[in-house]
Structures are given as structure tokens and as C-alpha cells.
Image 1 (cartoon, each protein chain N blue to C red):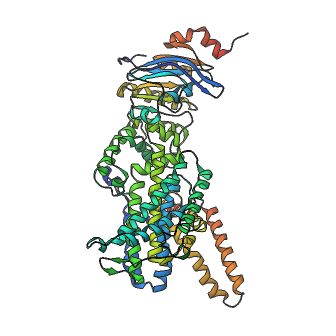
Image 2: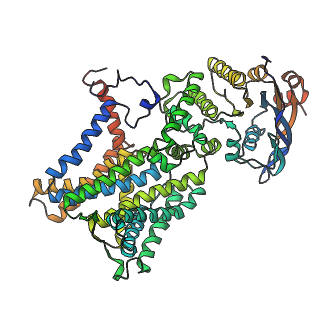
Length: 262
Length: 361
């Protein structure tokens, strides 16, 4: 599924990541990398550690062992603020929108880091505040157009149906103008049309903005169709890594998904 | 029909991002301001201005402060009265100890209020520190510490009250540009101007990046963090701004309403009253702070007048006042059941109804 995009160098390299919660080993010695502009899928059965992996990448969890190299900088762990500044965007498995706010405000919040004026200037709507707000608004409107959610921009997100909420959450992550976008089950619980829409948006984001995408998804059809490379986790360990075709034929992957007679 | 925004086209984001983008809202707010600035000082008698409208405005300001913290930033607090006390005593000490300079003394009182607000903000920041680790009811209990500590400190260290007995302070006269503000009308207008300005600033904050960060932390803190919002910074800013508002309200309470206050006056009971104001008025709404304060202050007075007019002499006085309390409590419960999101939401629903009225659809 290469549409002429140029897949570049490795921008994110995870080396020997281990993460424990007390005695529970969530991730054990996992290494894989992500190349610029590619769509990288993480798959695996429930509880394999996929979401933990994303949480390590954007600094929600801090692994006990391992190194993370992002854009050439080597570190032991990330922190969320730094990850956001470095251009890592994220959506969540269970929608984590700001329920009391409108779609527009949710997306505007995604651009909060771009706003430089302080709260006093904002209180007086003074100096750069108005200009900044208008600049961010027009950027956000671009994303609203892109995701085709113009009609609901002023609706509180709590009132929207599930599929649209997922789309708004993608919008909020896009509003950050991420260079690396982490999507945690962007298509969970959607019907076929909604999944098709979401696939189209993901591919468009990747194609038009050149955003590198790491996604977790359970729908194998989708994963095999849109991703460039797939890493497979099971019980916190990496069991396979490669192109969709390589992974599909891997005996361990088949065993992990179908079970194996002992 | 009355509240129809059809035909009001916004041609730029600037027009769409105004405080009141809808024409009817602009007219309404202009009328309300005109009424309170021009009509009320003329028609209001001494009792109304001094004993009803001034406290309503002051409590509105305190409720607005709490609403910033609890309604917008989602941090439950029971220390409101303590922050007010810090403001009142801060302003008192500023007036007392700050030497007069020629120009400065003209507006010294305003600086005293700002200083009181800043002292309250400082106290707020200190007691807001636990908010990084604890949330909800647990945080409310932590802010209780502020409530007890501040009242204790102000009583214990008599320096704060200039060594008066039992910590009672008499607020200095309010003089602005050499003009004494001592009549009920001038006091009312003075308080009204301060409250209007601070309400406008609050509205601006909550509709810009600061307010979005607060609401983001309130609604989903993990997602806010991932966007790059720093939780501690955002929460402490909410505590600081909120306490500043409460502090100014406390200073106004001492200087423009009671004149004489003691630390014990700013007790837990008062914190609860202000919390009830925002719950009844509408959590997360600037308008709701005003509606809630008016409701809680005015309703007992209204009930009292009503009882005296209707049942004068028919029921014993003791029973009457107990009945008033019971009806007051009953009405609070009634309003909460009818609209758990407060009077502000009721007003919003009313506006939505008015879009169609008098047509059925």
C-alpha cells in the first residue's frame, strides 16, 4: 500500500523497553522502530501490552528499563509535556475528549501549546491574545474542514454519537500538528462505513501532512490494508515484526491469535 | 422568535469569537448593565442598596472565584471563606501599614484590594499544592485545612489585626481620589464597578487558552497532559486566580459591607454558603455565580417578608422563622431536582425555547 510516499529514516527507536507494575510485567524487553512517514501497526491479543507501549512512547508510563531515541535524542523515558512539544499526538482507546466543551473548543485546546500569551493578557484580551486566538481558530477550521465536521463545530462533544466523537478526538490530536501520531484503536466499535471513513482520514493524514502514524487496531483487514509494517505483541513480548505479509505467515502470530494445542 | 439568531451571519472568525456573538445577548447585557448602573441607584432605597444589593454583588464575586476553581478547573474547594479572610486582612494591613504618597494615596484603596487579592492568591497556591496528587472529595478535605488554618492564624497572631482584642478589625474609610465613598449609592456603584470589571476579566479568561486548559484538566486530565498542558501549573493558576477573586470579595465584604469583621466571621458556614451558590446557580458558568448568589441571599429575605405579610401574628414568631428555613431548604432541593445543572442552565433552556416561541416548532 505505497502511494508514492517516501518512507524516510528511523525517527523513533525503542530499545529493550521493559515496564512493570509491581510484579506484573506489562512489557518485556521490547525493541522496534518507526520510520518517518510510515504507518506502523501494533497488534496483539487483549492484554498484550499495546496500549502500555503507546503510553511509554508519549510519556504517560515510565519504563524501568530501556532507551527511547526520538529524533536522534536518546533518553531513558519521555514525559508528556516534552512529548507534546516534540510533536507526538495521541488518541485514546476509550474516548478521552473534554466532554463539557464544544468540538471547536476541544480542537482549540489541542493548540494550547502554540499560544504564547499569558493569562493576564488573556484576561484583558490584550496584546497578542486576540490575534493568537484568531490564528488558532483558522488553523482549527482547516482541520474541521478536513474531517468534515463543520456541522457540529459548536456542539458539546458529550452529545455526539460515538463515531463522531472518535473523529473529533482524531481532530484534537491533529490540531497539535503532530509529526508522530499515536492512534489507540481508532476504529473500535465502529460500523463498516465509519471504519471506511476513518481509514480514509488516516491515509489522508499520512499522505497530505506526511504524519508518521503508529496505530493499534484489532480489525486485521484494516491493519493488513493500511499499514507499512506491523509489530505483534503477546503477553508483553514481541513475537513478530515485519510487513503485513511477513506477519501474516508467521507461525507464532497464528498461534497467539488462534491458540495452540499443548 | 424572540431569540432567533437566524440571519445574523458571521463573516469572520473575529465576529464569531466575540464575547456575545448573538445580537439579542448584546442587547440584553446592555439593558441589564444600564438597569443596574443607571436605574437601581435612583430607585433603590438605602436598605436595598446597603443590605441587599451590596452583599449580593460581593457574594457573586466570591462565587465567581469559587466557580473558576470548581466549575471551570474542576477542583473542589471548601476554603472559600478562608481566602476571603486573607483578602480582607491583607487589604486592612495594606491600608494600615503602607505609607501614604501624594498620588498613590488617591488610589491607595484599590491597591489595598489588589494586595488583599494577591495575599489570598498566595494562600490559595499553598493550599492548592495537594491538588496535584488528590482529587474530588479528598481535595475538598485538604482545602478544609486552609479554612481552619487561616482563621486560626488570624486569631492567634494579633499582628494581623493590629493587636485588637479577639482579632476584630475595623476597616478603614474607603476614599477614592479624595472622595469618600460612604453613601449607600456610592458604595453600591463602587462595588458594582469592581465586580463588573472582574467578571469581564473572568469571562475573557474562560473563553481563551487559560480557560480551555482549566476545562481540559477538569474533563479529562490524562488527555490534557498528553496535549501538553502542565497539570500542576494549570491547577495552581486556577487556585491563584480563584483565590484572588475570593480575596477581593473578602476585602469588599470588610470595607464596603460590614465595616467591622473578625476572623471567625469567615467560617466554614460561609464557605458552604458560597459552594451552594455555585451549585444552585450553575457550576462552570459566570452568569450562574450571579444567579446563585442572588438566589441564596435574596430568597430568605423574600420568604421573611412574605411570611410577615401573610401570616403576621397568625403563627408564633419562632415557628415562622423555622418554617422559612424549611421552605428555603425545600426550594433548594426542588431547584436541584428540576435542573441539576443550576439556574444558568435553566436560563439557557429558556433561551432555546424562546428561539421558537410562540410557534410550536
